[in-house]
Image (tube, rainbow, N blue to C red; front, side):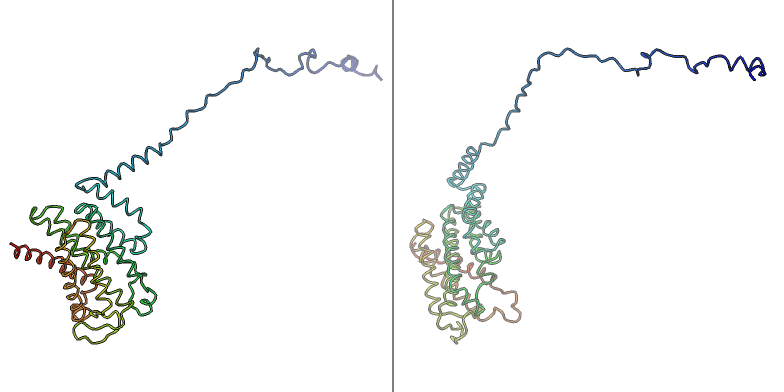
Length: 328
């Protein structure tokens, strides 16, 4: 059968097969890789990083010493300046925060800070101590039998904690006297009168507060000052024997503090007590005849307090002038 094939086909079938691709040596079939370059390494040396320098901490001891020196310098400044008065007052208020919170609201404390700064600027530590004594005694008598007063509806609001209106109403006349003293209005001839008016205004207010609070707490019988008719405790314009006597004692006490601190002499202290009682009687008349009456709704306790303490300050100054004129 092979002899029957065509010669060309017979030659193709009888020749050995050829590879499709040229054969390569085995070494050329290994995939190519980049030659590895090795570095000669020496002995490993531990690297020590130097720590960052520590941040400088504030010198607390030095700061405390600086603050102490600043406050001490403010206390000792003579005469006081506005900055020394503000610094001293701030230090005292921070130290006395618990006591302040017991008698004043937050806004009341802010108003009291202004009063304290002005007082220290005008009258120094002596004037400040006088106001502090007024505040401590006034707060103490306000807290007396507070539950009983609340049950009767005659207690101060907010548990006896007074707000800015009460602070301003109690100190307006004293602040005016302090400003007149700071700016030396009238010169040296009037300087003594401004101090006297300042002391008399707080004697008047303390006497009013103590007489009112003691009368509401312990007064057996309260009388309307215009008719002496028996009225309930806490009635505007009402007075009691217990409250009146306590008010006189309180005024005498604060005038004595002013005398000890060198703000008033003995005759002036007596004038402060006398002026305070006259002014308080006038306040009771206003309360009985005008306060809470139609057309006088604006005449609230704060306004009456301003009238009362202003009258006490003016009366003391006038009586002092009359006394000087009589002696001369």
